[in-house]
Length: 394
Image (cartoon, rainbow, N blue to C red; front, side, top):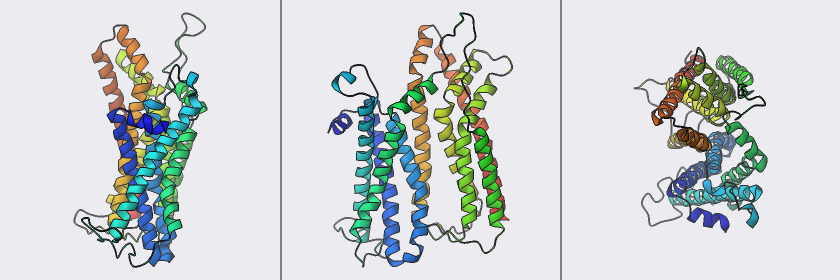
């Protein structure tokens, strides 16, 4: 009940983010239900199509957790512990709020699914997908409820694990740009430690590209068809791309930290020094969403390179919905992480303004950070996409 009261009194922007989480949950739930409807008539390939739903499902859960992290209603504040709302209770509230939003989306997905099957009448497009969704056969109630509960349960559990009190203390330590002072008055501040995932990420990227190249040479590889009639995807190639995507996600914080170091090289001025230190401090927070976005875009470019502009694309509506859900949730997660970083450094920015720092300097530093990230991740995305497309087009 308290989670619902906090939701009613939230800022319109916060409500908009929760509605986006509900929309993403509705999309993921609808894909799962469509897979169930197809599996009723085609039980042989149902497991393969259900596995394809894991990608948009993971993107949806990641976006839900990112929105929960930026929710101002569940942050620890002075005086809340006195009324029994300590960090643990606030974590529970954040998890429940995420679960409520995802449950709303699952309910919308069920209504749309039943409407397209023809079970609900009186609205436009009634029964338009009756043949695809096996409208002539009854739905197993237990399977429907299980699939609809997947997104809320996973999102609630992930939010509780990420926002537990120990994780909040870790995020606060990562968000600090640097220690304010050291033991000696004239000593230099301690550098921000670099994330440890860069070597593992590079190794996984190399392994993924190698697996993809090896698997593409096997003419008789097992097919892993997409839900939209895309029947020529060898399972080994997709496994290689998955390894590459995980490697990019692991390497993202290390690459962001390295960008901050490069900005401070060769006698940096105030702008480059501020931009570099900020990137190093926020490497863990924005690096992983950047890596995931890089992986998604590289996979999209590699898939688009298989067909020319005039070729007929064998992508169906479910494939398009899944791709739109993955790209949209990944982009929204990146924007939410950027908002979280801005909120984390709000106190530092206010202190700099009180010291007389010009606003133009802060804006210039932000532009330098953005340009540096684009100049680093854009070529990396293109290179990974080109390397991934070579064995597919050979």
